[in-house]
Amino acid sequence: MDHSHIVAALSAPHGGDASDAAKRGKKRGSYNCGRCGLPKKGHNCTVKTPASTAAATPDSSLSIVSLPSSSAVPSLRQSPSNLGRALSFDDFDEPALVVDRYEPDEKVDSDVFDETNPDLDLDADAGGLPASLMWEVMRRLPPPGLLSAAKVCKGWRDTTKRLWRAVEELKIRVPANVPVRFVASMLQKCPGIVRLSLRMESDFDSTMLACIAFSCPNLECMKILTFDAAIIRINGDELGRFVADKKSLKSLKMEGCSNLGGFVLCSSSLSTLWLSDLHSLSKMVFNCPQLREISLEFSCLENDSTDLKTMIEGLGRSCPRLQNIHIASIRLSHSAVLALTAAQLRGLRMLSLVLGSEITDASVAAIASSYPNLELLDLSGSGVSDSGISMICNVFPDTLTRLLLALCPNVTSSGIQFATFQLPHLEIMDCGMTICDPNTENPTADENNCNLQKTSGVNVHLINQKLIIKHSRLKKLSLWGCTGLDALYLNCPRLIDLNLNSCSNLHPGRLLLQCPNLENVHASGCQDMLIGAIQSQVHDASAEMENHSQSKRLPDGSKRIRVPHLLSEEEFPEPEKKRRKIERQLCNVLLD
Image (cartoon, rainbow, N blue to C red; front, side, top):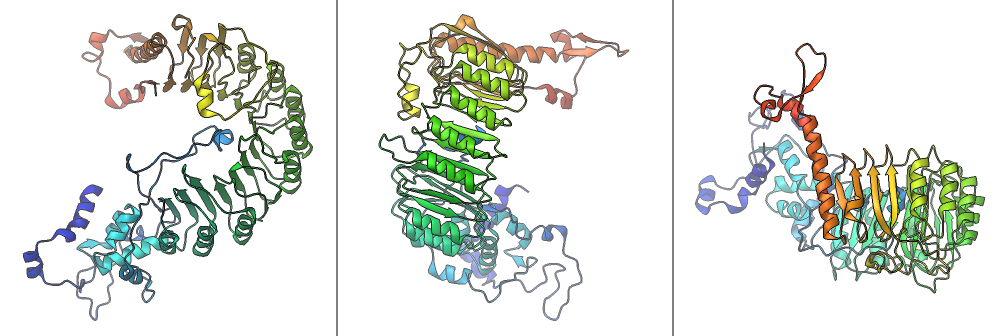
């Protein structure tokens, strides 16, 4: 049954005719059994519960969310280096999910939390529909819809109460100037919350943190994202007490942590920690033996006084099971890298040290000698040169699948080409703003990065560089802002995403894309002729693949022959099921 029709049926009691209601009279509930239809009084039903009823038990994976309208949701503040970017390179942010501000009805809330009859009969007739069907409909409603449904009748109110109790994941947008009691009212409806995501438009203070600690005793994952005007006002001591008290907390992700000042985190369960916008921390102590993934992003202000070397030394001693490390700071240096290599983290697989202009080829040598099993290496914004890339290729040819070297001014097209040739398992590569024309101003760097580095004595690369890449496994390639790139030849059969944004000097006649599986080509800021060449080549690739499908095997099964287009559908009709298999999605050329 179409869910839209179900919702419409459930909404019908709100708009009933007065005359019809008078004829029907006040309905207090069904007096007949929901299984066999006999009167309930003195009746013991022997009919077994249908399978659909069993499926109506509370779903532990239920997520109560509300999809946003394009006009109601302001854009989220984008952090300069994308906190989770280096840990998987993919987009971590799911679509913005919204719970609008609501005015709770005190009478309804008191009925919702009435504990006199916690066990409900899911087979009872509710509004003319089986309770199992109503459960499946209501579990798809957004929070405002559930609050409205609870006011309809007692049967609906009981179902919504059971739904709130079954919720394990809640995603809320907290608008500006919303009192804490509104968020507390929502959290108290869901005592079984395991995963909580807050998108704050208002300030997040110790009162809100205490509310979460009290209302979510079984919390395992908490994520706090901030909008432009929102500030997280908690300090390091308050955060440390929260983490220590939450014995089941496994994942903590927070933006806007500029007011922490310093912290001591002690947890026997915490395995994932992401903190961004850190600034001038006096102390950072980690006592988290189960920690496997950490992401620390520091502000780009020049007066940041955080001692990264001491922090990394302590991290290595107290968190021996670390597998993924992401640190973004302009204060990253070779001494910090040496402190990391001395920690001997045997399980380290992903290492991201971003914005450290003092990280050099000597740092790469230390990393390569200590951690030969890396699968991801991100040294974006560093001083690494082609010699460092050569060391990477010599040490990680069998393990490295993701290499990110964006904003590395000492890397040339020869180094990039050498890396793709020597790393056969490479799937993702980011070389944005590496091959740059020194005479061309690139606005992309100013928009996406904050004071990335001030390099002195940087080699001025020659313009009109050529890049030839032939790779059998590469899936994503980013060359954004490579204004010094003049010619590009790609032969990558598995490539699905190509970023050429702001490649303003790339010549249309020196572009060759032999990538039949391309899905997206980003070409914002490119010349119109180059955009036309890209569109023409991806269109020709699609047409060529469609042409390959017009072939048939001879009656004796000996070989396949090409069938003329005019005869392919008349004399040799192809089954619809087989035709769908060879259809290919057209490549998108994105200009925004």
